[in-house]
Length: 38
Image (cartoon, rainbow, N blue to C red):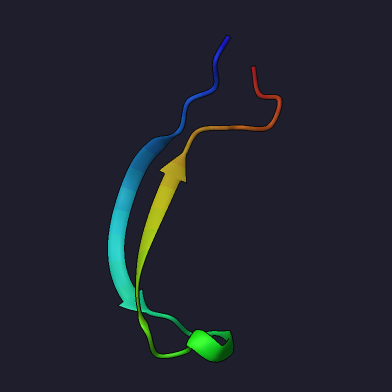
């Protein structure tokens, strides 16, 4: 059986951590379970 992930949200924001703080970033939120789910 193959695990699948679905894209549930794509949004733009500003990075808030490390040296890249303040840079525009694209975040992709996924659903699904890649870790031993049945």
